[in-house]
Image (cartoon, rainbow, N blue to C red):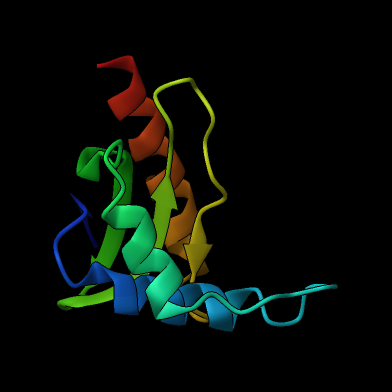
Length: 97
């Protein structure tokens, strides 16, 4: 598994991961591609604060954090839940650096 920072075009994979992984949650609201694109175009967006897990070139999970110390839940596609721990560890390591 490879961990990496945000790259242009990752919005679609992130939307698919979240919508798949969170669909069964109470009051689930699907993410839209337009919403994700709006967020990455924001003036304060920092690509290094969004980590993605890749397996054989496919994005299978992601985790984000903010410079104020808040860490987002690591979302993963079904079958790739093992990526959650490395994503969280990567976010913590990046925050310390």
